[in-house]
Length: 467
Image: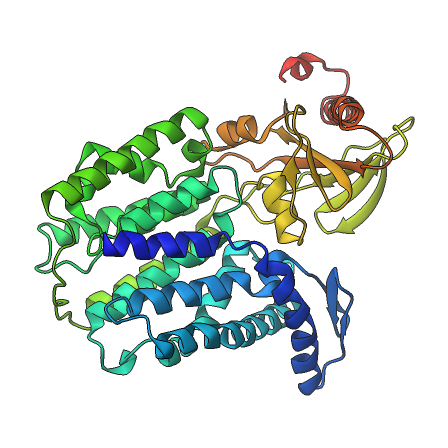
């Protein structure tokens, strides 16, 4: 129960969205100041930051909020056996400047990477990995006796860090809260097992093969579940129970976003918690086993697979370009503002090819990375509101039109599936009603789709029926 309450506190920290803007006010000038100290001209323009001749969009993650939440979570978890005193409170307060500094170093590292390699092999997962690597040196200041810990405890701390690094950006995706709840439930029971479980080598082999398949097929929504199944750390009694398997399925966003399955997973969590409390309560703390140098090194190397492996072996798909016959304004190498003749005034349409080979995120997640928090509009399904705009998204996937993120995710979840195209439409809230925007944005998106079909299949109409 103690561990569940502690991870409940981390669950709340993951949802501190209002910290993003506050941290950005400090992070942006700090990045500019540090870049200037290295002799680089840096300009903070609010929505982006210019370092030399490189323009870097300013997203939610740039504020350092994910770094701060991870550092807070690790500090709370590793100090869970001690009383909450002034020393621990001071450490939690010092996490703020530490996270800002680590985040600044992360952004400058990304700027250096873009100077050298952009647009080759860059992904959001690589961003998170660079942030995690810059975070590790700060752990020595916030984790007691880190230098003297045995390898088993080191692995547990690294495991928690890797999992939170994957989890923090997923929080605001559809079903993200359930993904977080299920992930933290498993983390509450994850320990380096002693003695080693039977058939450990066979379990590791299966784990490695699963990582290769996930990366090759680019099924990134499975990475959290994969990480929780680490053979040395997974809680086997939980895993091999019916409720435990259902809870594990809740870490996969494709299932977590389904209202019906959310109820099933919630019941499984309640039942498993009741059983644990009724049977034994909190287990006594166990001494971590002493591990040789090879296994921890291999586990650490495998632990970064979710961040880099897809970029190395993932199936490559071409970035789809907008159809001819439309007026285009290129924004980045894979994104355009697209206009059609007779387009309703006030409504803008944007075409986003995939960035890398991962699936597109939901509209709320995409905009959150850009610092805009969207809220659903009552009575208008799929329409969202934020920053003075109505917004809605659509998808074109393998020649078919998808009017909702759920439909797109189902279609693109299959192995080796193409990421497709993300269409985002917006309009000022002051210029029209939500109902008018919902109706006209749907019509405009379908016109773009018809133009796309004509461009890809001139003279053919068979694909037009696939909606």
